[in-house]
Amino acid sequence: MSLARSVPRPVHPTGAVRPGRGETAAKMLYRRLKAEIVSMQRKPGESIIEREIASSYGVSRTPVREAILRLADEALVDIFPQSGTFVARIPLASLPEAILVRKALEQLTARLAAEAASAEQVSELYGLIERQRRMQRAGNRDRFHEADEAFHAAIAESAGHPGIWTLIQQVKIQVDRYRRLTLPVPGRMARVLQEHIGARSGPRRRRDGGASRRAERQHRRRARSQSRIFRRGLAAGAWRIMKCRTQRD
Image 1: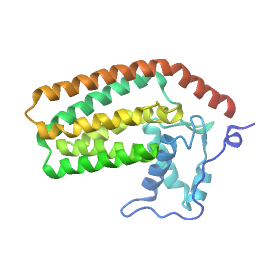
Image 2 (image 1 turned 180 degrees about the vertical axis):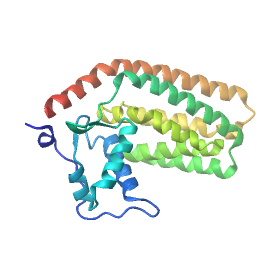
Image 3 (image 1 turned 45 degrees about the vertical axis):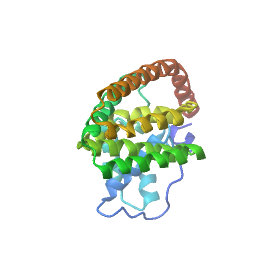
Image 4 (image 1 turned 90 degrees about the horizontal axis):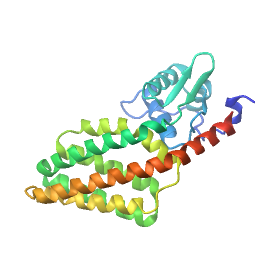
């Protein structure tokens, strides 16, 4: 049985889908396919067929090919000239390193934001935390994740270096895929929310170096704890990926 026939396909739009304002068809397809891969709607090892995507979105194959090439540059798809195009496997061995890099960048932006954030930006952070609180109470992990992303983007903006968030997104994308594939960590939303509440007060205590150092130590402890969790979870994650591969091959 061929790989393409054995893989259940995610639901796609039927008919023409117009790109957003100022967005080309290739950019729109890149954005949507990337979201499907990161959210695990498209599983590791799943076949990607240009003509099916072009037909589903009502576009030619040229923008589909452009989107796929861009995804390949980000290691989200693998292109084999004689075999086809497939969703890339999750590189488990590189996940702990990605976590460390992400934490270092987030700690840097948090320190800079504590020194530079305006009252309006602090108010925005409060609003994002309240949104996370509502999503935690509702048990809505997807919306909580969206608010979490917006919070970290706002921190980078407040720090005066919004480009750092772009770097963080590039570093953490495989970690996001892994977390979608494995079971959620119990209590994680509550822990993240509590850390954000602590981070929120940072801009109001710019001169409190002790508070800043305590927050940094807390982040380092959490990073070490997450590294241990990921090491324990690598075997389970590898088993899940191998199971996906066996079911599809």
